Image 1: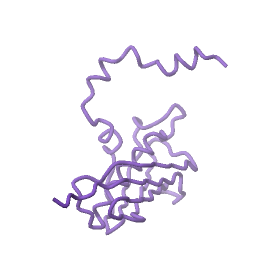
Image 2: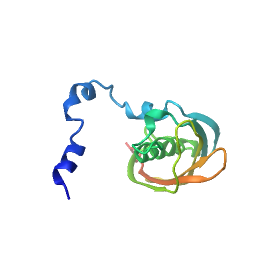
Image 3: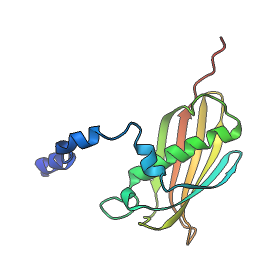
Length: 154
């Protein structure tokens, strides 16, 4: 095992800290959401579509797993208010789980469907499914659990 190679890989962005520090706050959400289109909103369900942009690819030229997880977070959080939850925020993530079943590639049209499985007083559980529009094949499934802020009784 080449430990130095691992270290070089993890530190390869060290020389560009001024570029990284110059990024706007909360840049990650616009980065993954920029190509997102809302196709359907119903109570407890949101369906979005997007054409996979090159900026979201990994080294293997397929949709990056981190981008997929970020979409589970963003689209999954968006479904919470559709069931009547009226908190000031959609809470904080307790757990995000993603099963990667296949790859999706640049310019491929995909569909992202989020469903609220449960939105209670303190916890929300969301399912997010990723399909290839052309074939209907599921290529990733996510589960998102969020802690919801309790409303003050004062």
